[in-house]
Image 1 (cartoon, rainbow, N blue to C red):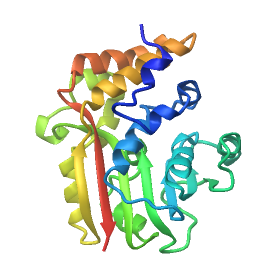
Image 2 (image 1 turned 135 degrees about the vertical axis):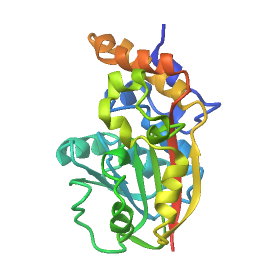
Image 3 (image 1 turned 90 degrees about the vertical axis):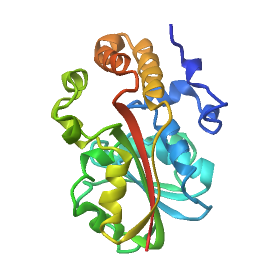
Length: 254
């Protein structure tokens, strides 16, 4: 039986383990966003005072984490979550003076060119960032030398190489798994533009285990949680890391 305390893992995620797991589960929109972000930032250089765009910020957990842990000023941008809902999370967390909530779609970002030192996207980039022309659009908002980092669901092998979406994945995810690429796929897509230097492109170690643990805890915390989360639990259990992972990719604008 999984419990909230199973999400406190200081050996693997020391920063994330300082956060109330009940608070984090209450903001659930997918695999543990703080674990993904903490791992990703190991390949970034975030310093106090930087202006950071949290693209696809969801209900706001990652933006709170960025402001608290790294002292950066955050613009939390999301299309699904009303800005006032995210702002309430930031006020309650005591970071409203450093985090601004904006509701916007990823292809019509309302920012000035070269206005960010870094852009991060946690468990969201797969929805809007796979097109060949998206990186050139997005890097326009980065200052020269600015950093980009994403954590996105990944496959250990390309679906095109496999010839089909694995059946256990297709049952749960459907055609959307076509946007789940390998880390090396992302590396090539970004590097071929000549706009950035890719500084890291890797699959997260034991990503499927983290995802499974998180999903089991979320299922245990809600009355109808098992019905909602059981398909994902079954998918990850059957996969056991054969195909499913998370890609962590970072780059610096030339």
